[in-house]
Length: 356
Image 1 (cartoon, rainbow, N blue to C red):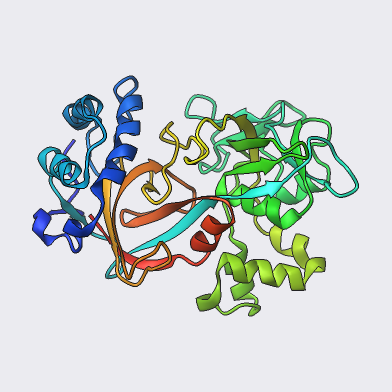
Image 2 (image 1 turned 90 degrees about the vertical axis):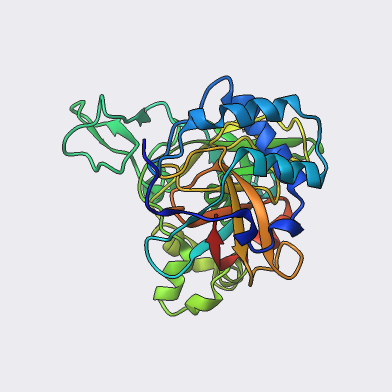
């Protein structure tokens, strides 16, 4: 597969801030992808980064002990060549950030905990090229059988929250706040603080299938929040001030997420994501899976981004996740970690960035 013309050859000396990063942290994330990919190679993205091209680097990563910064930088320089990723539109790429919320939860419904996180319902059908009806929206990856057996679109968020699948999907846990539940849907995973003090993790299992519509854009279009001021924090503040309008806004996002339980083997790492490895705070990036290949190192230069600490974000990241809103060659979502502090970082990241 030839490389895309969107990938322009440069030199490591052309990467702004390359020498100043701590490459050893990126190396640890890369080695986690190596452990998985040598057993089950990732699929190639359309930009032409072939998975077999990683074999030597993956093998070398597993043969290496934890590397210091200089050795890790030498590792990446020995096994990779840099390419600038040209955006399809505009002068630069764009980054946002995501995190793993940590919220109180109950294993049973109570007077306080009334909002469920649901497992996939029994009538949810995974759609692929083998069973997709000609009339079904090609975007939909999940559906259901109608009364006549024909495969049709699954119930959307409003229908589900109004009882359409009551009794058909197990509630894994119950939350107190519908806005907390919604942002867990957006992030795709959460740590749940149970009444007995134990920590549970839920992560993405499936979805109803419809396109995602963010509440920030809805509120901006309604004139409620200026678009330039839309952050997770400003959205939450608006919902606190307008609790009677929560369903009105959230139901305009028809997509609904279903979850599964997942282990918390290492609380310093995030959930296992699309690349089948746990995410590393500050070093894992979600990319457009149709274009890019998981395991690819990305050097991100976002000079105006300081939320992660430091004056500028110039950091080597590893492609280990994806998302329905992450579309385009120079578009990424930076994993900030778990808990409230990570949420404060993730909620304000909307920055221009150059991708390499």
